[in-house]
Structure formats: structure tokens, C-alpha cells
Length: 77
Image (cartoon, rainbow, N blue to C red; front, side):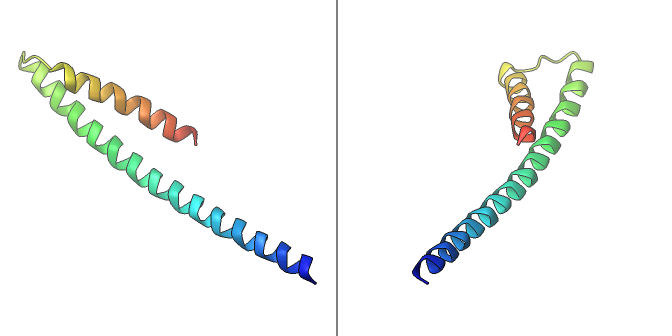
């Protein structure tokens, strides 16, 4: 009977871990969607600025590139 109790405890532990992973993935998906929306808004502003002949700061260009990399990696999960 002791072995059955140990097995049940391990299964319960794994079920909790799976629930945590699922919640974390859902949170990640939400954050990626928000980041993507922010990138799209900024890209529109960049296009507007470029049309006016304004220079785009390097940190803005770098951030946009990093967002693409981050979202690609997150979507692989």
C-alpha cells in the first residue's frame, strides 16, 4: 500500500507541475501578443517619421529587431 501512496503523490506533483507550465505558457503568449502590438505601433511611427525625412535612432531600430527575435523564439515554444 505504501508504494501506491508514493505513486499517487508523484502523479499529483507532476499534475501540479503541468498546470504551472500551462499557466506560464499562457502568460507568455499574452506577453508576446502585447509585445507584438507595441512593435507594430512603433513601426507605424517609424514609417511616419521616415516619410517626414526624420532619422530613426539606433536604439529604436535595435529594439524592433530584438522584438522580432524574441517573438520568434517564444513562438517556437
